[in-house]
Image 1 (tube, one colour):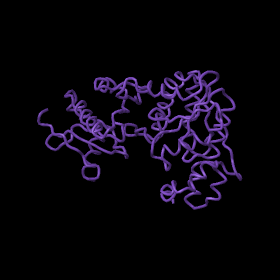
Image 2 (cartoon, one colour):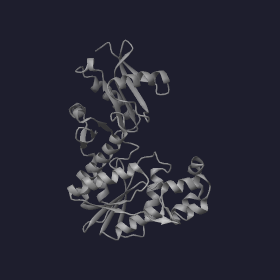
Image 3 (tube, helix red, strand yellow):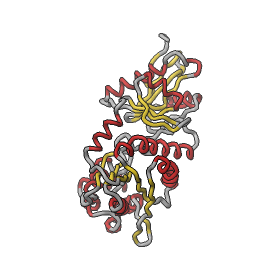
Image 4 (cartoon, one colour):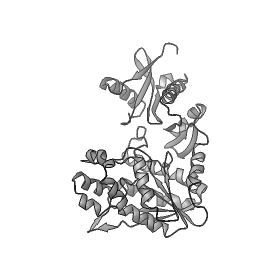
Length: 340
């Protein structure tokens, strides 16, 4: 093993990317589009093991069949972890196939949730999700009939406000989780702030940052799932497993409200799977019909389209005052220009 060479793969080089993609394809994997950093172990220039990361997620880790049993996964993960620590990222995650669970357990990762035969989510802190839920618990009202809503709010619209008000009127305490990844047009901190300020008038609502445990489609990897439909369903099942096995029991949540999704097939699949899984876990699901304005459903995508077209007078009709004030402030200039 001494003759194997560690090599940083330049993700900006088409040649290097093609080499890495070809290696992963042989292992039945694909190279995720959001890869930030990649490395490989090579034998006389031939890639025999490789790994990558995006943000704080390790991914695309593979070892050539002829080199299994050499401990190369440990060398790859060790290299990636050291690089992540060097960049100041210490709380790390990995999505992998369930059969790899023991490999990563030995490397210091603990399971969070699993979709049998499909995917397992692991993190390098045994108490990571427990610490997150303790933090969430201190910022909410306890007792009574508790429910939850998960939103992205890209940006916060009158539709989101209606969903939260509707849910809050039907429970004693409502936890609102804002999806926490910065791959939306509006940064997570801005989305969180608009929601928090926009529902501040409702006494039984607590708004939380979803952090790492509300798994968005943008952060869920696709490199080991070949069919798109399978990918969508697996992502939904894993996210719902985290919610049902950790978040809901820790916070006493017994109902989840979701907005009806007549147009987006991905969200429609998510809602269907949620209705199949959560009731079995003792969590009721209610799908709330979307509200419309002038015959059109209010949606964040519609608001972004109107911003793009510069029709701010029409945007004003679809968003709360808090959102409109932000959109017309100098703080939003960069986002407005990007959307345009």
